[in-house]
Image 1: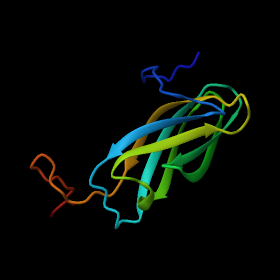
Image 2 (image 1 turned 90 degrees about the vertical axis):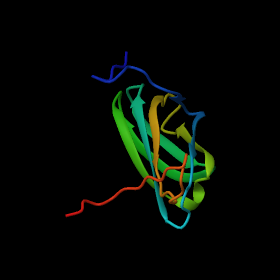
Image 3 (image 1 turned 30 degrees about the vertical axis):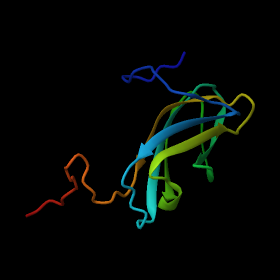
Image 4 (image 1 turned 60 degrees about the vertical axis):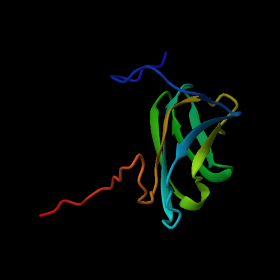
Length: 130
């Protein structure tokens, strides 16, 4: 029985010693900026040690670990060149043992965007002006 406090008790795909993938789309990726960030939120299901290897679009990025039926956020900096304009795939594999089971809560990307109008609108951040 996994409960996650005040959040909804809803999770996505199960991460097992087999692999699971989450797909997402990006638009107007600025390939001239070197770093993009992927954030993965996972919930441990089994009580033991968890190690999750991560790849994006087939490029291995390494792994992160945690233990127990706890929630873990992994922030991973990646080269922008490995993300695609359009569809991207994050693949996660439980590698600690044959009973390493976790669940995906979310995958998010923070990436550099080109200043290109979308639906005839251009949005961009502005620093505080004084």
